[in-house]
Image (tube, rainbow, N blue to C red; front, top):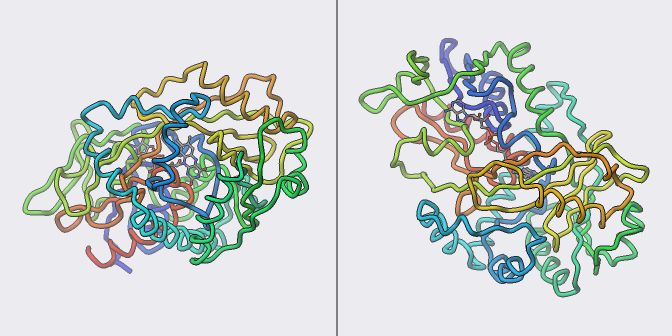
Length: 408
Ligand SMILES: Cc1cc2nc3c(=O)[nH]c(=O)nc-3n(C[C@H](O)[C@H](O)[C@H](O)COP(=O)(O)OP(=O)(O)OC[C@H]3O[C@@H](n4cnc5c(N)ncnc54)[C@H](O)[C@@H]3O)c2cc1C
């Protein structure tokens, strides 16, 4: 517990910043969050796939990912767009990503991600016993379907490795998929079988951000300064004295950069744990549910998209585009919609115009976020959570809190 006047300033009101801010405030810090947007969760945390996948997560860099790339490129419907990697600014990331794609590195990185995910589940569950949060949370379980027996065999091998660290899974044949999730019965997508994860959870990350902002301000005495952009750091002799926001400076004792994709621009150029980050863009479509909505969340591994019911809405998310261009392409929307409709024709009112959203996964080469001291005595970072920031948020907040308590 810090002495009562320790002021912590957190940059960014996404899921990582808000989870961090709430845990710092619960631990006795006087917390201010600075957010350039006018509301919480308006960045990458807004329209994500809603998966809280604590047991079967996998680092992106792997021999399997590299082997699947040529096929992904030949099949534009998978939504993988690598063109942006040709830009020199992304080369340092690409070189380090290739270095993380051996089997040994995949195993090591996956094991580290799972440890953080398990901590996250524990910390999030504990937080929810202290504070009521309404965010369309459910624990319905999940199916990850594979189009071919070969794909399913590879997935079974990966699940066996992940299973060593805990969590339940089952490899199930196609007919069991239809029993477990009747909304799949009319599918026209190929299904050779699935990995069934009975404990997988879903929830709306944006609603959770709003709830965390409320809890921080109303229950924990924190402050959020919206419409305020941090433009630089002020300090001397290895200590940060304040954050420059246009023509004024916001002071504090401890500073935490949780600015998602923008973290790199705010952090010092060199510190031991710094990693390059790229934005891997993905799209989501949100529909009102149809006559036969799913209970389970379903990932179509071949089509690289996920479907989850959030309350009375159906969220479809997919695509992986290496780009900074956040404009939504109508063709990509049509492709994602038609894959989802083929998987579960009556799950949503697919004839309606969906709520469309595009966001960036802040991706490091090894898929592991930067959490801890950035440089000097009082500057910390919690950023780079890639495709799993929603899942990893509360474990990351716990680790950051530990680093701050040790180091401030
Ligand atoms: C299509 C898609 C699907 C996904 N699906 C899932 C999923 O199913 N499960 C899962 O676990 N994860 C998923 N993710 C990943 C997850 O959404 C991200 O990892 C997570 O939202 C990152 O949170 P963040 O708080 O780091 O970033 P953000 O939410 O982007 O928050 C950063 C905040 O910092 C603010 N900011 C930036 N710069 C400044 C500045 N200079 N001054 C003040 N404020 C600033 C921004 O405005 C923003 O609000 C998905 C991502 C995408 C794109």
